[in-house]
Image (cartoon, rainbow, N blue to C red):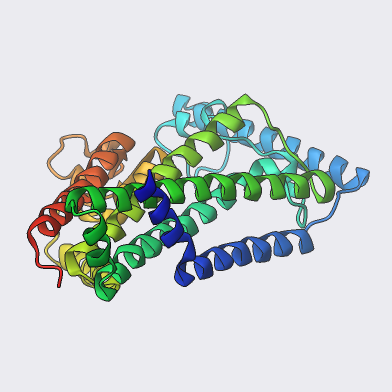
Length: 337
C-alpha cells in the first residue's frame, strides 16, 4: 500500500498530468458554453410546428414504402423514373433505427436525448488521448530522469514496481474518467432541462448511452496501457508519441493507399481505426466491391461487410496485451542506468 500511495502522489504531482486535467476541464467548459449559447427554450408555437412537420415526415416515409411495394407488385401508377430499392424492407418505417421526431425540426434547440451520445463520443475521444499521453509521460519521465532506479533502491523488485505503476495509472485514469463523465453528462442534462429539451429519456436511451460509455471506458484504459507499454519499451515519452504519429501516417494513411492500389480484399480489417469504431459502436459496416465478386449473388449483393464488437475487442486486447507483456519482459532484464 505504501508503494501505491507513493505512486499516486507522484502521478498527481506531475505538471503534465495537471496540465492535461486543466485542458480537459477547459474543453468541457468550451463545449458546454458553445451549446448553451446556441440553444433556447422552444415556444409553444415552435413545438406545435415541429410536431406537425415530424408527423408529415413519418407519413411521407410510409407513403414511400407503400409505393415501393406497389411498384414491386406492378400496380403502381407513379413516376417510373423514381428510384426504389430492390428490397422494400430497407425503407420500411417499422424497421428504421429511428423515425423523424419533433426535435429534428427545432433548429437552435439543444435536445439532450438526441445529442448526448455524440457528445459522449467527443468525451471518450478526449479521454483516450488523455490516457495515452499521461500513460506515456508517467513512465517515460521516470525512466529518463532515473526515478525508476531510485524507486528500485527502496523496493528492489522490478516487476512489482512496474505492475504497481501500471495499476496505479489505470486506477487513477478510470476514476478520473468516471468523475468527468458524470459531471459532463449532468451539465448537458441541465442545459437540456433549462435551455432546451430533455427529449425522450426512456430505458432504451439510458441502456444505449450506458453501453457506449462502458465501451468507451475500456478503450480509455487500453489507450493508457498502450502509451505506458510503448514508453517502457522505448525508455522515453517521445517513443510513444513517435509510434503514434508513425502509425497514423505510415499505415492509416500510406498503408491504406497501398492496399487500395493492390486491390486488397476487405482492406479496412487491417486498420486499427476500423476495430476501434466497431468496438465503440457495437459494429461497423465497410464497403468493398470485391465482396460481390464471384459470390453468385451479384443482383442482391450490396458490397458491404460488417465487423462486430467481439472480434474488434479481441484485436485491441491482443495488441495492447502483447505490447504490455513485451514491456514487462524487457523491463525485467534491461540495464536501467
